[in-house]
Amino acid sequence: MINIIKKVGWFIKQEWKSYTFMLFMLLFMSLLLLTPAFVLGKAIDIIVSSSLTVALLVIIVGLLILIPLLRYATSFIYNYTVAKTSQKLAFTFRKIYLKKLFQMDAEFYEKYQKGDLISRATGDLDLITSAATSMLEGIVFNTGIIVFAIGIMAFTISWKLTLIAITIMPIGITVLNFIRMKKRQYVKKHRIIYAKMTEKILESVEGQRVIRAYVQEDNDLKDQYKAIDADINSWSYMIKYENQLTPLFELVYGITYILSFAFGAYFIMNQEMSLGQLITFISYVGILYGPFISISGVFQQINNATVAIDRFDEIMKTEPTVKEEINDEKLITFKQIDFRNVSFKYPFDETYTLKDINLTIHHGETLGVVGPTGSGKSTLIRQLLREFNVTDGEIYIDGKNISKFKIRDIRNLVGYVPQSHMLFRRGVYDNILIGNPEASFEAVDKAMQVADFKKDLPYLNQGLETKVGEGGATLSGGQKQRLSIARALVREPEILIMDDSLSAVDANTEETIIHQLKQYRKNKTNIIIAHRFSAIRDANLIIVMENGRIVDRGTHEELISRDGWYKEQYIQQMSMK
Ligand code: ADP
Image (cartoon, rainbow, N blue to C red; front, side, top):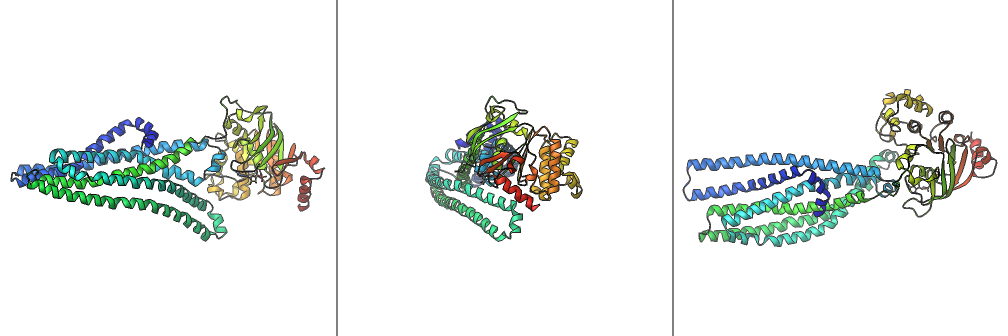
C-alpha cells in the first residue's frame, strides 16, 4: 500500500482538492448508510412506548425518504469525481509510459515483446489507477462505516454487546490475511501468463494473412487455446483462494449474529436495552458484513496493483544502453565516418555478428555492400542508426567517437530504407511525409519522382490520398519499396541507406532509380546494400561481406578482376540476364 502511495503520491498532492472532497463525501456517505437503521430503532422504541404521534410519524417517514435521496445525490457527485480523477491519473501514467517507450533502444525491444508492453500499458495501468482511487473509497468508506457503526453500537446501545459481537472478527481477519498472502504469488504469475496470451493474440492478428495462406488456422487456434487455457488455469488458482474468503466470512458472521441476538435478548430481559436498540444493533451487524468483505477486497486490489506497479516500474527504471554523453556535439554534416576494429554481438547472442570491421565512408561517395544473406550487411550499416552500442572497437565521425553526438542528430543525418517496409495506416502522401513532416508538396513530388513512385499513382484508387492498410496491405512489394525510398529521400538526408531496397522492383525500374539517385544525390552519401550488382556497380567503393567480416573491397572493376565471391556472383548474374 505504501508502495502505491509512493508511486501516486505526486498525483494525490497535485489533486489534493479532489481527494479531500472525495474523503469528506465518503465519510458523509458512510454516516448516511447507518442512519436508516438508527431512525428505525428509535421509531420502534417510540411505537413500543406508545408515544407515537402523527407529527412524529411524519418526521420519521420524512427522514426515511430524505436519506435515500441524499445518498443518491452524494454517490452521484462522488462517482463523477472519482471517474474524472482516475481517468486523469490513467492518462498521465500512459503519457509517461509512452514517452519512456520512445526513449528506449533496440536492446529493450529485443528483450520485451510487444504483447507484454501492451499489457503493461493497459491491464497493469488500469489496476494501478483503479487502486489509486478505489483504495481511498475502499478504505475510507468502509473504515468509516466500521468505526461509526461500532461507535454507535458501543456508545449509544451497549458496549458489552458490542464487545461480544466483534471479538470474533479479528480471528476472521487474521485467516483472511494469511490467504491473501498466498494469493499474491499467483497474481504475479498470472500477469506474466496474461501478457503471453496478449502476445499470442497480437501475433495471430498481425500474421492472419500468412496463417490463412498456409492454412494454419487450426494450428494457430490450438496455440491460441493453449495460451488461453494457461490464462484460465492461472485464474483458477487465484479464484481458489478468493473462494476461500467468502464462506469463511459467512461462518464468522453466522456466529456474530447468533451471539448478538442471544445476548441482546438477554439484555432486554434484564432491561439493559430496548427492542429498538436491539433491532438497530442487529441491523448494524448486518451492515458491517459488507465493509469487512470490501476492505479485504481492497487489500486484494492493492496486492494486484502492487504487482502491476512492480511491472510498470521495471520498465520505467530500465535505462537505454545506447546513451549520449552529456557534452554532445552538434552534428549537421560530416566529412568521413570510420569504423575501427568494430565487432558486434546482438544483446542476447553468444556469437559475434560483425568481426573486426575497418571501414571509412567518405562524404559524397556511394558505398555498395554485398555478400551472402546473413553475412551481416544490415547489421553493419544499421550501426549508423545508433540502435545498439558496438561490442568492441569504435566508430568515429570526423575523428570524434559516435557516442559524443546526440542520437537524434545522428539519426537526422540518415534516411533509412529498411528491408521490411513499415507503412502506417494513413494515406500515401502522409506515409511519405513521415520522412519529413515539414516537406513541401514539391519536395514530396520530387522524392516520388526519384524513387520512381509517380508512375504508380494512376493505379491507386485515390491517388496520394489512398489509404495504405496496416503494414501497407494494399500496395505491391515493389510499390512499398518505392514509397519507402521516397520517404527516405524527402528528408534530403546526408546519408541515404538502402537496405536491399530494390529487391522487389524489376531491372528497368532499378536502373531508373539508380540513374535518378546519381543525379539527385550527387554530393551526398549513399550506402546501398544489394543483391543485384547492377545497383552498385558504379559505387565508389564496394565491400564484400562474409560471415561478419569484410572479405574484399574495391570498385566493381577491381573486384571482377580478381577471383572471389564477387566475381563468381557477377558471372552468375550476367549469365541469367
Ligand atoms: P544480411 O543483411 O547480410 O542478410 P543481417 O545483418 O541481417 O545479414 O544478419 C546477420 C546475422 O545477424 C544473421 O545471422 C541474423 O540472424 C542475425 N541477426 C539479425 N538481426 C538480429 C537481431 N535483432 N538479434 C539477433 N540476431 C540478429
